[in-house]
Image (cartoon, rainbow, N blue to C red):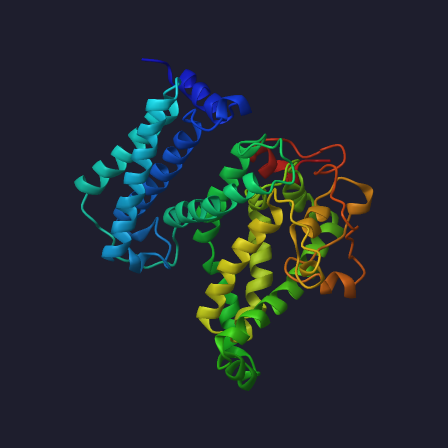
Length: 381
């Protein structure tokens, strides 16, 4: 049997294979798909079988005993197993196909051998393992094909440099940050209950859902604009935000690269006014989903310029300039949804038919690696 480190290096080499080794019919694509689907199915099974719902997001917990949800997980595992077998048949290196088959079979054994013990726990703390699996599966199935069909940088592969760090950032965001989500939300609920604007809250809460959603986006983006601008202008806040700007490649995963403390601060700044204004919980949940997909889109390696839409909505080109390494890209385009705020407050920059030539911070002062980046804001400069 090969040593673990040798197997890990072989697996990594297969993931990062050069373009000639990833051609259609080589078994690479089916191997990647098999590993991804099987891993997502395994995480969903583990979260469903963990006692006391500790690894289950509250939004997903009611679905776990639904027959259609169970059927979906089963089809996910079957698809992952099938794609992995295809990879084993086509590809000379068997590591991807073997990994996918092992993950799918492990999930099947866990699903059959462990009884469900998902009784509710008293504290509003959870580590959304299922949320992470569904997030990566959902956004990956949407944006990986889009980045292959309409890439901004055609030579950038799916597993580009720093991809492992950003996958870990997605995991941390879904697991650790959700486990603390009730902390910033609780003050917002308190503010809402004590607010003297009870009539306003009631009026907003009774608005049709199709009206509430754009109003939430406008109000949340206003607060996010100024918070985002503060993270650029205040030195000690910039030390945290610099982690997000340290990414030297833009794709569907790079938007998740944010320091743990910045995520908590930004969530609090956004959540407090939204909850205090009395928007319906369903409208807030829809906004969270829309914002997640939207953020993924504007960071993606997609070369869409969208010349008409960019006047009203933030586009990939608009936000890529926010991450540009050029001097012109410094402290511009802070809005996440509506460029109107940048126009109003003098931070709008969008040259016609041009994209940044590079990304990141001049000199690249932020170290590579998640743990080094976690400690970066606290190091003596």
